[in-house]
Image (cartoon, rainbow, N blue to C red; front, side, top):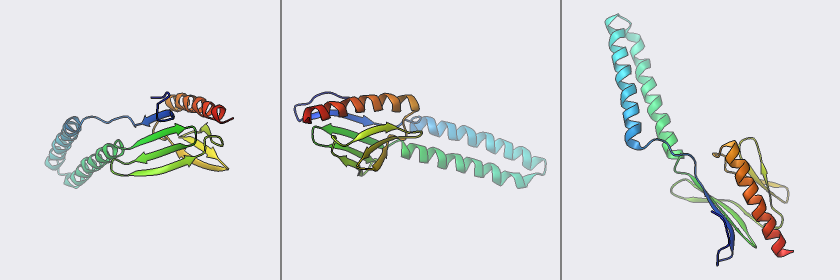
Length: 156
């Protein structure tokens, strides 16, 4: 979302990573994998290859850990706000907000990098939007760059 606001906001955007499956669907996937693993383990035990079964259980545990970590990371957001005097980027992890950048827009520039966007000001780099895909990073950089140019023109 961008545009002019009566509070002096020239540009505002909330960036969110792609959401994983809903919790119920994740449980169904994990349950299906666990059932297949249990059935495979039973076959191995019947054929005398019981040492294989702990590895099947470890696979299910690792999958559960990965799905949980992905769901936890999906709660993260980044809030980008530009006024005539400030450009701020806050990152939240679902519970707390962390200031990533608080810059004067007159000196700030946005660049697209391989894995993230970067705001540069006075020789310092502030990375953000690492969870966006390449195409979305490009589009967002163009929009934010245009808003920065607009803010610079207002001050000139």
